[in-house]
Length: 327
Picture 1 (cartoon, rainbow, N blue to C red):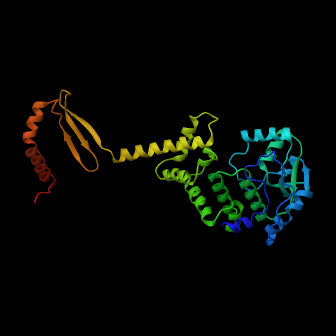
Picture 2 (picture 1 turned 90 degrees about the vertical axis):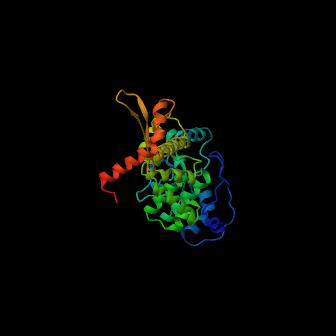
Picture 3 (picture 1 turned 180 degrees about the vertical axis):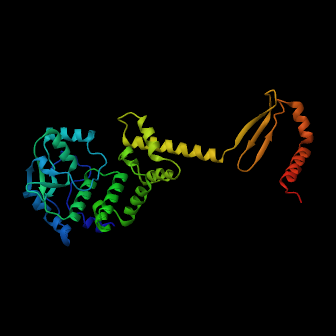
């Protein structure tokens, strides 16, 4: 979408690689005025940031809304909590008033809120009255700028937004995606069985093609049970991306094995009354083969070689007589 998406970036955020400890810029570039609640939010954000940051008790804030992260309570929250303990909360979260007095609903900043709940103290928050669409766009864009969600996290977020009835243009603006980009995420998530993503996790660095390849196995393999077995054998601290690779490798190997077995041949050893090997019989979908190893039974091999054609014709005539296929 290019320029239109930039025009709808509804708040001026620090660069994507800026850490939590970095303070927000006190000024923001002047932006073109936009219609509706989205435009109003951007036009007034500088004033809000400067004049409307409040200290709020964490238990006054409800963790509602759509989740855009698969993992919230992880080691990164511990690191963030330690940073805030040392340096203070430098970047405010954003909330909107709840229907209950002195209560708020989170818009963005769930990780910061979780970290402060760990260490105690109040939360610095921008309080803004937003409708559901503007709130969702603010949540999606802020997360994209601070800690880019993984492909599969975006896919789940898109699925939740669609199931909650958000319009396509709102979903596109929330994640900064084109219509085709949203479709690419949706196609993959719809092919994956429920519960598989939760087993693997966010898998940062694993893109659409890899998730799509894994989804393709679902037609022949029980992905969830396979993933459970694979992940159970891994160390508890295995990174999510490595879990994905282990599950994908196991599914790929199983698919190749099943295909080989389906297209493979049935081989049996023919033995005489004394248990000695006479030869081998190999049967697959296309051929029937009788093999005699001359080195194991040279005399029989020579005898059969001289009579093989006549013996085959005799067997064929016997089949015709027994099946009534003769002319």
